Image (tube, rainbow over the protein chains, first blue to last red):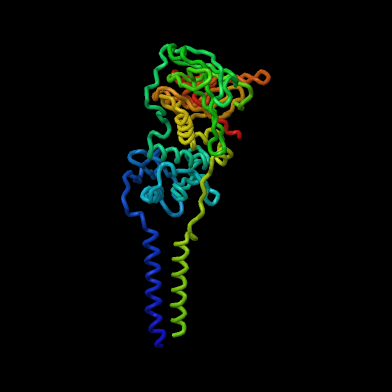
Length: 244
Length: 152
């Protein structure tokens, strides 16, 4: 009896502490604010009540169907809450990705689930689940970083408009093997710029072990690389180097 | 009394297990990101460009920048549509003035192969694939900065 009197409060305290710690940990990060305004709202589209998730004033995804006992708006609120939590934890636009969870296409931030692109949502959007997840990913990336799809690469001068363009055929060379032509390229641009082009230098790189990139740089030299700005390639004539 | 003691013991053990499971991440559902190869397999070139176009664009600009050859214009990665084959065969980075680059949705490639020599005229267009008519909806003032081959 005496032992029980001691054990009872100890067990109660241990249980309470552990459950409280669990609750506090699971809620961590959801109450802090984020610089980006993430919100959810109800909207009516084609006489259909939908839930929308917004970053700033950009709609990044739209939920049409109820699921798991949640209305579209409730689902949108859950997605907005997950997104806010992820942003508060330091995830950025670079962590937005498409993934799979239990065989379904999902939108992720890092490893964190944001939204599931189920078949019904995909059907309403005239897409496949993976296509819908990719569309959501693109929308979110654009909202988080509006310049992500079109980047201005250089800043030293502006690209000239091709008001009176001309073309020219020049050899394609590789920096690694000077003097060896890999083929020929047609370059196009303003007349005075095209006149400066002597060759096109081919640079090769591999992106994530899954894609080979061949970059073509119009150059004013035949053995080195000195980019002529405002000129770009419009046709290639090469020995079978890549399968286009 | 014995029953009460057992109940308390069970409650304590359950609380410990729940806490341990949450802290260790055991109850978190395993999600994994799809890489470029997965998306290429599931959705093809257009989907890959949608998902990875921004990253590939930045990657190419970084490579060119490291070689002091970054273009001064705006750039974007779009799918290449082979007019002869009637299918998407890769992607291209286009370069030009920002307004025209934003209008560019694809590149139409007209291919000619004679023996071991392959020729490709590449036309930046304002749609992802050319329409049925003769017009390619060409975007003027935009050229090709790089081509991307996914078949490696």
